Image 1 (spheres, rainbow, N blue to C red):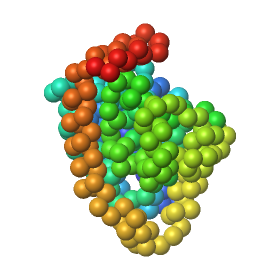
Image 2 (spheres, rainbow, N blue to C red):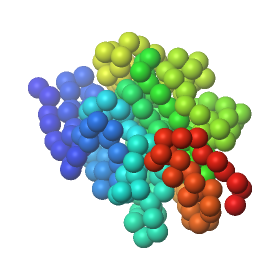
Image 3 (cartoon, helix red, strand yellow):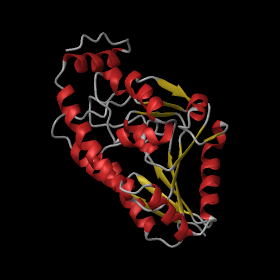
Length: 266
C-alpha cells in the first residue's frame, strides 16, 4: 500500500514499486520561493533514508511545471529569479544545493512551462519527461539579468556548451519537440502521458540494484555540490550588479507590459 507524507506545499506518495512521487502544490504556475525549495529538500533527504524508495518523480500540480521564482509583487508572469536585496536569494541557492546533493535519482515530469528558475529546477533532476505542451526557457537575458539557480553548471552537461550558450544568451523559448531533439527532454510523450511516463522511467531505474544505482549516480555527479556553490556565488554577484542597470529595469517593465524590451546597454 502506498504511503503518504507532506512537507508544506509538497506531498510525497511512496508507491509499491519503490518510486516516490514528490509533488509541488502551487497551481497553476507553481512559482517557488525559499520555503518551497526547503520543503523539496526535506522531502528528498527523507526519501534518501527510506529503504522503500529507489527513485523519485518530481511533479507539479496544475498547468505548468514551474514558471520560476516568486518573491512578491515583482514576480509576475515568467520568472526573473531576481528577488530584491534582502529577500533571501542566498538562502535560496544555499537550500537548493541540498537538492543537488541528494542521493536518490530524480525524473522530472515537465508539463507546461519550465521557465527561468523553473528550468533550473527541471535541470536539477537526472531526467526530464515532456510533451507538445512543454516549453522551456532561460529567459533571464531578455530581462536584462544574469541566469540563476545554478544553470551555469546544470545546463551544459545536458545539452552541450553551445546549445547552453544559445539558450542562455538568447533567452528564447523552446517547445517540447525541440527540447527533446536537443536532449533537454529525455522522453517525449502525449500531454496526458507525461506523469505516467515519468513514473514508468523511475520504475525502470528502481528495478536495478539500488546500491549500484546510487554509486553510479555519485560517480557521475562527483563534486557537483561544490561546483554548484561556486556557480551560484558567481551568478548571485552578477545578479546584484545587473539589478542596478537601466536594462534590467527596462526588461522588467517590458515583461509587465508584454512588449519587446528596448535595451540600451546601460
